[in-house]
Image (cartoon, each protein chain N blue to C red):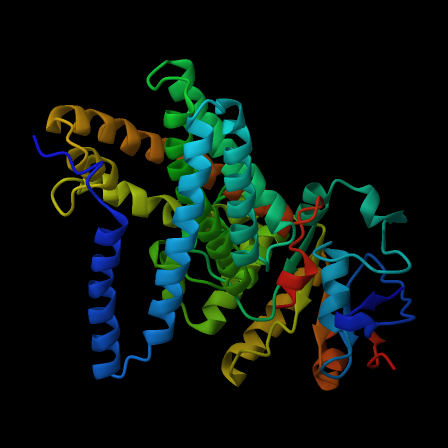
Length: 259
Length: 196
């Protein structure tokens, strides 16, 4: 069986930069004006992954107690990113922290508690990172969509409120749509898995020499984990966003009512 | 009583008025004078930044807001239709139980009950919004420029309907920029001027 895991040298990485040169040449030839972005992305990915590699080598090398710290740094970074994306929602950072935190604790917690994955840094960190990055996207989408929909439908929302509906009732159609928007990408991805593209975990395991059947089993666990994590994130983000966009007296907040 | 706008610029400032429970009271003033804001305060879609709004002698903030809104119904200037049929719009929470009778009361053909609400004309939609508000059995009706979106033909019909609701014993508070309309329809007028 071909195992690529230990065969990629730094020289091989350097050679693969040829493909980046091709991308730059195409961008220049087509006047896409992306050369600078490609160079920045290449440089950033190199530095970031190199740094993460050192950190993971250190944590996996007998410092597993740092696992919660690594996960916490990931959650904080995702919170700052998602909070900035949803900045027109008051308290967006708090919402992002709650929903990404709930998704991580809920799904990773279940996987560890049921011993589906071992309680080890080598399992918790990569799986946690997948949950966190997916929950981040879901949270941003849910918050932004809900805020924008309530702003553009504020007449209808207020008509419902003035008829005596609660904030939860008056926002329900758009709350539902936002939760769908937040979760649909991962649901669709789960539907077509293996048909459109071999997913990342499976590809990684196959390249590392694992048998297809064991690669598939882990990939299934990952897909179901992401489904659960995204649902958690969308649920919490939607609920908290509604709470922040209405007052305790079932009024749309002024910045939205007057937008 | 006052309400601040964006950047602290007042929308309503130093306003005080007493609206009797009987008949039709018109709130008259030019655009931007804060007339709509006054109605929103009565329905608690907004709260004043200073002062208070009293309903039956009690601060509106001391009532359960959902119960208050059912008693004091607000109908916005532009008719808002919800997805579904006219019956879907008017039916939920209808304390009268009879959608057809309610539609007749606001001058709509009961056969319209099965029509999709967003296919109504503006005048019909305005009447449906009135029916939707009346369905909850309110004691007070707040109408924001109820005829401003209508042509002359529909306008007269809505004016007669509003007058008849007041004559039936409902407290009606109507905002209008049209002083002539207020003089013809209302039992009394409250005039507001733009905040300085």
